[in-house]
Length: 130
Image (tube, rainbow, N blue to C red):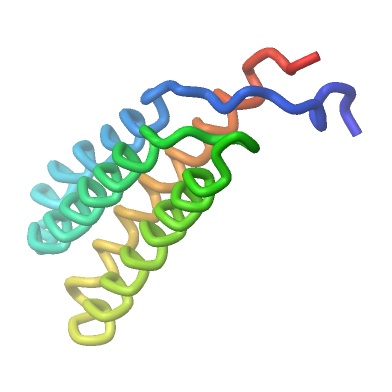
């Protein structure tokens, strides 16, 4: 194992990963227009992205740590709710109309993956606690 990887770090408070994910969603709009794909699919992905980011903004205001276990539980529930709610909507839409749901899934998954990867870079790029 690489030394220092398992050392705890403070949670980053940067909005950069969310902004990078948002840039992916925004950049997908012209791709949809040029490829003559349904813009409703992009709109669905963008709407779910915005809704998910609003949940993150609300949850992010709560304190974390052993001193506030109830708030930490609420943060965990909020983050889990974001994933489950978005997944539920995307599955329901894709089952009813695959030409609408699959492109929306692709945009959302790409944006979420880019946000997650940039979050990892932000986290592991920070100073470890000693």
